[in-house]
Length: 352
Image (cartoon, rainbow, N blue to C red):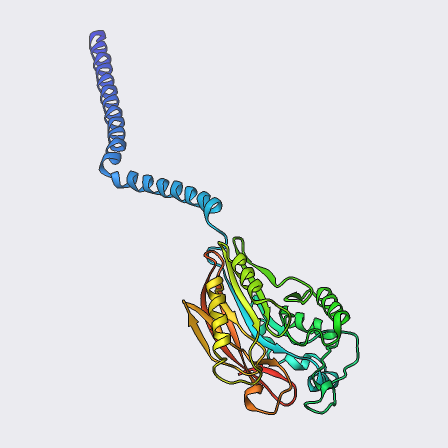
């Protein structure tokens, strides 16, 4: 019996060893399978690794591009500035009478929505702004006092509020109240944030900042005053520099002359273009005259009136405004457009 018991115990031990060996083999096989599967998945699915590498590469490129953009791309690259040029602006006689009756805001109220769309609006201020009483209101048309202008100080604020924040003083009415009137005009304009150029006692050139590396040089020429033609041509030539556009704003020609301004004016325009002008915008005749292109540059000989009370003919009640788009990055004129202007017998100006 003892022998039989020992045999059973030995048999049980052997079976236990066999079961243990099988278990170890199973665990080893399972471990091998797991390791093999993990390695195989990397080999079988290389697209997963490629996708991960592409993503990481894209992120690096994006980071590099973003860094370069911040450092190297001109912030003005896509910036376009809009500039509007308008004609003669006069706030005395009937215009002043209507403004005092209905309020100064009423004169430009209908034009205001268009004026507000531009970065710069530039016009010809056809007379001084002074504290003097009007001497032309109620006078007979054609009389001496009928042509002597002075505008109420409120006009300076009205100009600013309607986005007309740069004006030319280079005309035949700015000295209607003498040097003291000119001094007052400059004072009121400065107080209200309106810039000016072409003053008989000041600079003929004024620069506007269009972009970081772009300037617009406005050059005045008053043919009816003491301006010297050769000196103005020299100013144009000196103003023409890299990244600077030159716009000449001449007060010239013959009043009420429709169509062609005559060879004398056209010859002077060619000289201005040859000296470096990129655009010429004329005033004074009180009517719209022809325009033409000289060596690829546009010349508007007269824009006519913008605010005026000349109701004796259709042509003096209509004007022209010129819209110009400038690329701030390239400092080039991208486009030009024409806007029709009308003045009614209530003293109001509006765009047609």
